[in-house]
Length: 206
Image (cartoon, rainbow, N blue to C red; front, side):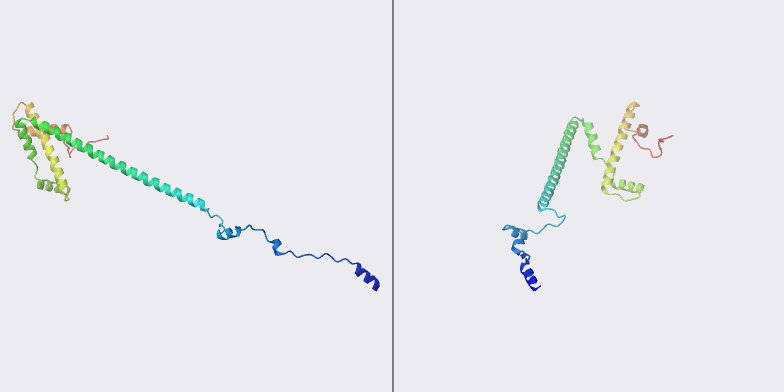
């Protein structure tokens, strides 16, 4: 049996030796310079935009701001031009009115010129106008309001006097004007609706 064991041990075939893989064989092949690039550029996070997208967005914002600034500047220039044109037009109209007034005054007779001078010199006392306004409104008013009301009152009196002169002429009478002429002139102006009546209230709906 010892011989059989020796023969069996001598005939036994040993399994082939398994060589362990070397680290050099398993390591992936990396091109030179690729490792350096990977170290310099960190990996992008999930959802983070690429640098090219950021650059495009910034350029779009800059272009939008430039367009807005140019549109605002164009609008401001347009407004300035319109204001300038209005001023020039108003100045031209004022010059035309002054020229027409000069032609009209130059064609006046001596009597008409005297009447026109008296009309230009006449004015209501501003202190009396101010007291009247304050008594009606119950509040104090500025000097500009007093000046405006004085001018309106002067125009109103001129219209009444002009109408009274027409009444005097139609009645076949000569100036100076009398109270009856003034009363008739006021009545006619009221009938035409040129004088407001606080006591009369027009009913719009029946």
